[in-house]
Length: 72
Image (cartoon, rainbow, N blue to C red; front, side):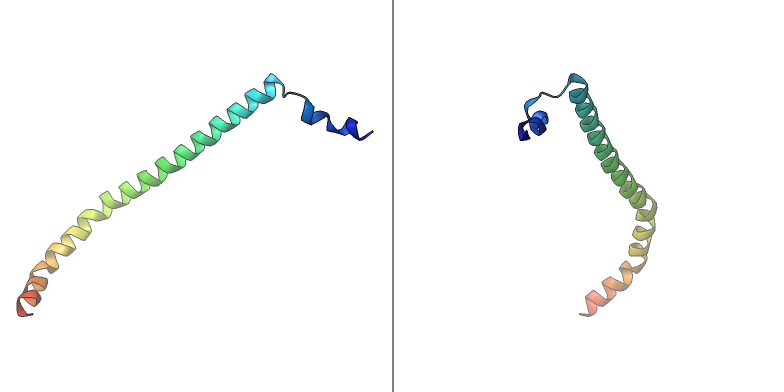
C-alpha cells in the first residue's frame, strides 16, 4: 500500500501550478530589483545631501593641513 502515497512524484504538475511558479519567480526577481534600486537611491540621496557639506569642511581645513605639512 506504500505505492499509493508516492503519487505526487509520478505526476506532472498542472499548467496552473507551473504558471503560479513562474509568477512567483518573477515577483521575487522584481522584489529583489526594487530592493537594489531603493538602496542605490538612498546612497545617492545621502551623498548628494551631505557631499557639499563634507566638501566645504575639507576646504576649510585645507590651509591648516597644508601648514602642518610644510612644517613637517
